[in-house]
Image (cartoon, rainbow, N blue to C red; front, side, top):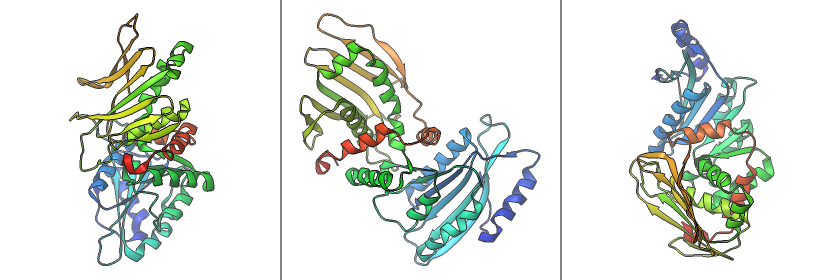
Length: 358
């Protein structure tokens, strides 16, 4: 990715044409959709730029990356253009446009007018809103009206209850398609549980649960500090699917439901993504035991064990999706519509005691 010098907004398309004239014999210009990214300048901005690079390696698209500087002393609007080239071996001579928009202060109101002429017509528009949607922002309404689908990162939310309420209200009032990167990160575990407990016999085991335990990775980084979210998502999804009735939760994340207990615990795995679910355990009143835990030597491989008082099945493997940076956004871009399970999970989040789980 080679960033060009800062240019005037009216020069964007002209400068892109100049770049492509130089690359015409080497690369093919391609776009399957428009990807708008909005991020306030912080340590996470480079993280989202890295995510964009990963997306382009899977799906060519026109990227419009908006960075707001909340600490600027004077308002400004700066634009630059470049071409994103996937890493060698991952493409067939394809490259994509990147339009960078830096903005601060009162010039925020100009961004939608600058953005609109540079969207590729007749292609879907995906908006990655990298900030907390529950905090009002002057750009959110105008950008969301352009979007075919809005993808959020709940890691940005300091209040998960407020975040979930905001998304539910947005879905109700606007009926727009929603996605969530942390929801995508739990997909492998949801698939594992659904495939393991598909038979009537196994479903009977779920109805007899007495204890559920979910273990997540407590390895914090400069990009991730809300490490409980994926585990909370998985627990709330289970609760919504199995109709558990929440009663109480302690600060140590010991949940009491009407007919069972649940615990969220942590371990530290240095090479695994922060907040990633490491293992789940189910115990029943009949002393049946199910455990599924990642294998340290192969993080996306899980070892599954099932046992009861009178038998113990042979352990077998399950392969989760890769946890590489950017894959959660790729999943949400591939997804159509809004998951009913996701919306019901958000409703379940509303029943939890927010002060104790944060």
